[in-house]
Image (cartoon, rainbow, N blue to C red; front, side):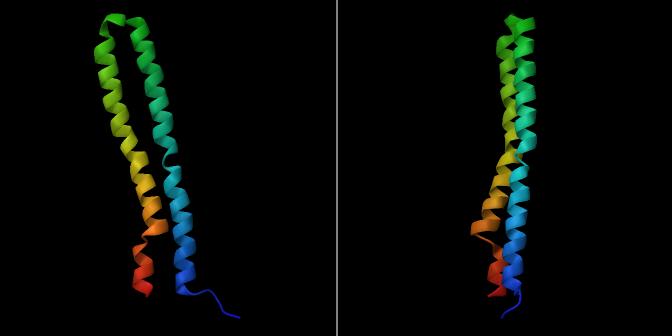
Length: 89
């Protein structure tokens, strides 16, 4: 019966890390929903400023989305292109 090897430990820690990295997508999702709601509220109050409100809101949402994309990238890297596994041989 074999014990836990270094490779097994790295794979388990990578899976846990990937799950935590994907959780990073919750923050941008909440923030974008809040921004969209406030943007709709702003357009409802000042319909003549619709273009400027939407432009600003979309720019903010694009910046917020990068956080979720970084989390997804880290998760995919840990699961499929893990550099630590290569170090173990």
